[in-house]
Length: 386
Ligand code: GLU
Image 1 (cartoon, rainbow, N blue to C red):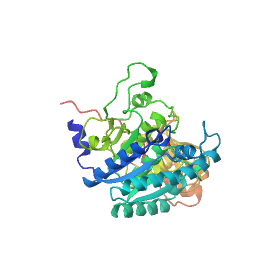
Image 2 (cartoon, rainbow, N blue to C red):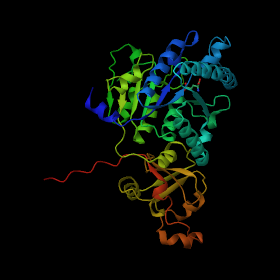
Image 3 (cartoon, rainbow, N blue to C red):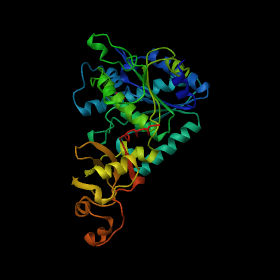
């Protein structure tokens, strides 16, 4: 057991396990052997005192198989219809399998629009916490039958990353059809090495992952790494591990060097800022100057009108907007205190001028620091010479 793994996992109590279609399904639809194995592994975790929430794919793949459809499903309605058939089947299989261990399952199906609304976000949270309190295994999936592009999570890696925030998980384990993250695509035939530990999700790490998904899954390794980036930004460790391996969850919790462990970021976002940064869809962009960049990224300050140099898009008071630097690099996301029209009028001005220009001054800041989620790391300070 490595010291880093041991330390990172020492205080974990609540684990969010995400399992992909490529793990759960085989040529004959849902792979009952793998599912029984996974369920047994989760039941053992529960006996060991861990709480587990499960994000499971497999609805579309299972429905397609049940209906005897060969080849790829072509249209969105076809996928949605297959999910309608497969989701019920998936839950019956889970219910039977967990039932053998004396555990109940609860189903939660969501779309992105369910969690972009703060009130609904909090309601879902209350439900999940009650299910946890009752010892029920919650099985979460995208509500595929109603989700269309604008309200879609896109893939279950993203859904699981959002759920980690909602249920305040201490660890996310993403069970996949590979052994973890490799330094290059293993299917290309060249010698690829498994990366056991990622201390930071750098661009270099992102380029190790390819976009292509499996024939049944949606995300591919790229979406798993992007999800890891979000989850670790929230201060939660993330493991990508082989889902078909017997006892894989015990191995991870025993601190064995299984899969790839992504360490949490030391300075991380709180729940509300995580929601702002990763759940809300940005309505526009505010370009800021170097002084404002230092103020918000390095000093944790609010964004004032004087630091704004341009406004792109149309937005209203309270809307989420992205702050970028002069080169277009994304720095932060926040909820604005003024509309795009108003920010255009007051940009570059001192706070004292707001009233003169707009005829009123409701706020000093364009975005208050409490509503501003900084998404880049502050540059490391140079150590003074001894
Ligand atoms: N929600 C989809 C399903 O259950 C899977 C999405 C994904 O694989 O990421 O079939």
